[in-house]
Length: 129
Image (tube, rainbow, N blue to C red):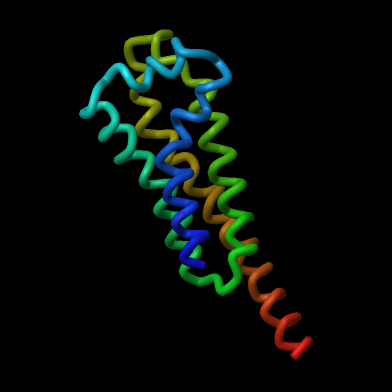
């Protein structure tokens, strides 16, 4: 589980930048042009989402169960960061604050589904023994 949690942290930190790669260098520069303070701002708010996935994982015993909230939560975040054009409006950067907050219900629901999956895997493993 520790390796899976480390992977959640690494993906969570790199996801906003990686989601913008398909649109080219100009889109990546929108996120990197803020320097260290911009990276800390983006990373700090994005930590809301990936830390909630970590929090959900504390109830899991099997790493496979973590795939459900990770795929759903990171999928939501990737789509939002992919579509956010900071050059479109002066207030577009406010979305960087709200994207991780809007991801929380997706992570909570998929975390509950992952928990049910984890329970089922535990029962199957116990029955096999």
